[in-house]
Amino acid sequence: MIDYGLQGKVALVTGAGGGIGRAAALVFARSGASVLVSDVNAEGGAETVAMVEAAGGRAAFVRCDVARADEVKAMVAAAVEIFGGLDCAFNNAGINRLGDDEYDDAIWERNMGINLSGVMRCMREEAAVMLPRGGGAIVNTASINGLVGNGAQPAYTAAKHGVIGLARHGALRWAKQGIRVNAVCPGVIETPMTAPLVANPEMKAMIDGMTPLGRFGTAMEIAEAVVWLCSPAASFVTGHAMVVDGGATAF
Ligand SMILES: NC(=O)c1ccc[n+]([C@@H]2O[C@H](COP(=O)([O-])OP(=O)(O)OC[C@H]3O[C@@H](n4cnc5c(N)ncnc54)[C@H](O)[C@@H]3O)[C@@H](O)[C@H]2O)c1
Image 1 (cartoon, protein in one colour):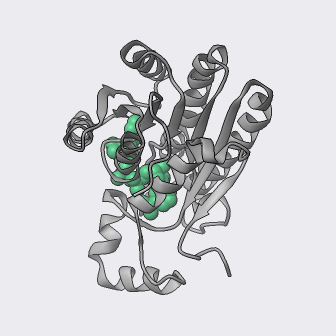
Image 2 (cartoon, rainbow, N blue to C red):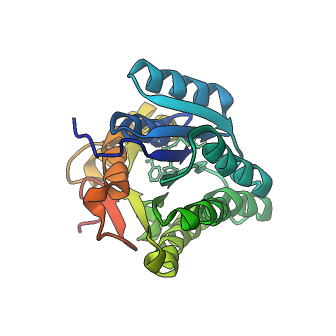
C-alpha cells in the first residue's frame, strides 16, 4: 500500500461517515495525516474515527451539515483547534437520490445546497485557513455526471458540472498563493449510495456492462486518487478533473 507522504499534515474530509469519504480518511491516515472526519451522520463518523484509530492513525469527528454556512465554518475551525492547522481538504459530502423529481423546486434547492453550494462553502473556509499558512491542497468530489449528461437528474448533473467549475476557479484564484485545487470524477462506485443498484441484479448487470472494466469501482480506488492529488507527488497538478471510472467515459 502506498504512503503518500503526508506525515505531520492535517486533512479534513466531508461525508466521511461512510463510502468514499471513509476510504479517503483511511488513506490520509495511512499516509501520516491527522484526519478531521466530518459528516452529518454522527454514528458513521464515529465508526470512521474508530477504524482510523484501529489502523494506528489519528482522527477526530466533527458533525457538520455542509448545507449550513455556520457549521462549515465551525468544522474548519475545529480542524485548526484540534490538530493545529489544515493542509489537505476533501470536499466529498453529497447526496444522490435515484427516482427523485429534481425539477421539483425543493428537491432542486436541496441538491444544490449540498452538492454544489456545500462545496463552495467548504472551499471558502478552507482557503481562508490555508492562505496564511502558505498553501494547501483541495479536492472536490464531482462525478462522471460532471462531464457528461444524465437524462434523469438535472440537479445532480448541474451540481457536479459546477463542482468541476469550482475546482478550476479555485486553481486559478489561489495558484500563486500555493493552494492547488482539483476534482475527482468517480464512475459508479460500490458505496451505501449505490446499494440499491448493487441489490438489483438487472441494474448491476447493466452498469457492469456499461463499464469497460466490467464492474463497479471501490471506494478505495477513488480514495487512492484523491490522496495522491493532495500529496507532494501531485505538486504540478491543479485545476484538473481526474476521471476514475473504469473507462465508462472513454467511448
Ligand atoms: N458512489 C458513486 O457511484 C458515486 C459516483 C460519483 C460521485 N459520487 C459522489 O461521491 C461522494 C460520496 O458518495 P458515496 O458514494 O461515498 O456515498 P455515501 O452516501 O456512502 O456517502 C456520502 C456521505 O455524505 C454524507 N452527507 C450527506 N449529506 C450531507 C450533508 N448535508 N452534510 C455533510 N455530510 C453529508 C452522508 O451522511 C454520507 O456519509 C458524493 O459527493 C457523491 O455524489 C459517488
